[in-house]
Every structure is written in structure tokens, then in C-alpha cells.
Image 1 (tube, one colour):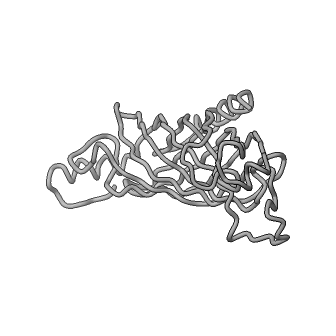
Image 2 (cartoon, helix red, strand yellow; image 1 turned 90 degrees about the horizontal axis):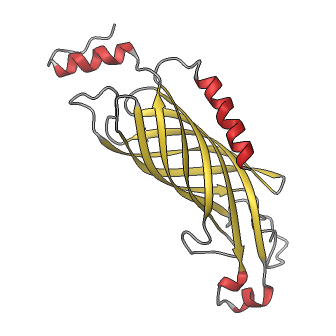
Image 3 (cartoon, one colour; image 1 turned 90 degrees about the vertical axis):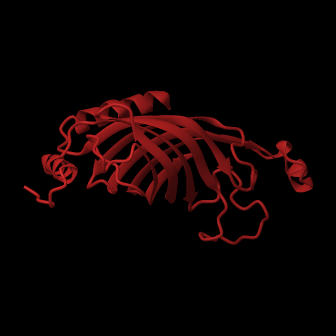
Length: 227
């Protein structure tokens, strides 16, 4: 899995190297875990490392298009819980996953580079979109939702911390497709999720010249003009 991660990382670098204004490329790492039939409620249950490549295109100081390629491992064991059914079932699993997400990211405050008096140094954000997960060679669509904070430490370097929950549309992340033998396949009531908390670092290759003029004009107290 780590070899695949580094292969994708190199591929992303070759693509982003050709990017135009306002594009960012970065990587992310953190802890990932599973919630579902084995673990219905525990946060950070049996966490494993996750790795991710990030590409972000900033439309303006509020909105961005973000692409993620995530790699991680999830696991669980019924014997970790006191529930009588689980103690009798004794289910156990450990699975790798690959997850590709396309998200729209929204900053609650203006976030811009280079710094101006209109730019906030630390900005909360949310993102959501559509994903595609492969677990045990079984692909499925997913719905990722992320909340986090980001800041910049240098002119072109952005750092962030985020928490993600991703709803899947299969019920066998834990190898328990129908644990209660209900023979009902419900996509809406499915309770298998993948989650992670992570830190990221991204490099912005350049900044739109029009936006540089915009910042300069606003800082001088002059009306807005776009060239």
C-alpha cells in the first residue's frame, strides 16, 4: 500500500508541475479508523496510519476544488466490546482501502496568499463531495465530509488539521455484509463508515496576478478594479 502511495505521489507531482495559477499540491498523514457493525460508536477505535495526496485549485479566497487520494487500513474485533452478541460472534477483520475524493472546499473567512489585511492567518473550513472507495476489491461510491483549520507559515506553504467522516454504500467493510441476517440491503441505513484525523502540508505554486492587484487596491483603500 505504501508503494502505491508513493507512486501516486510522484504522478501527482508531475501533473501539478504543469498547473496554472492558484494550484496547490501537498500530502497528508494521520490516523484512520472504522465505524460500523463491529464498532458502532467509539472514536479513534483501533487507529492505523493513513496517507494522502492532495491537489487544490483555489477559485478565490473562499472556494476551492480539492482532489484527494487516500490510503489506509481499518480493523476491528468483536472481543473489544462487552455486547453479548459480539462476544458470541467473535468477528475480526483488518482491511486496506484506497479512496479517491472530489470535494468543494469552503473557507468561513477569507484565506489568501500573499498576506494582506483582508487575509486571516487561521481559517476554519468545511469540504464535501463525492468519493470512490475500494476495499477488498469491492468498489463503492462514498460521501466524504471534512471539517478543519488551515493556516500558512510561509508565503506559499499551507498547513492544516482536519477530521473526516466518509459514508460508504456497501455494508461489508468489516466482512459482515448482513450480520443480523435480515436479508435487507439498505443503502441509506448502511452503518459502515471510514473516518480519519490528519495534518496536511501543501505548496501553492503561484498566485493569480489579478488577485495580487485586488489585495493591493483593497489595502490602499481604493475601489476594486480587476485587470
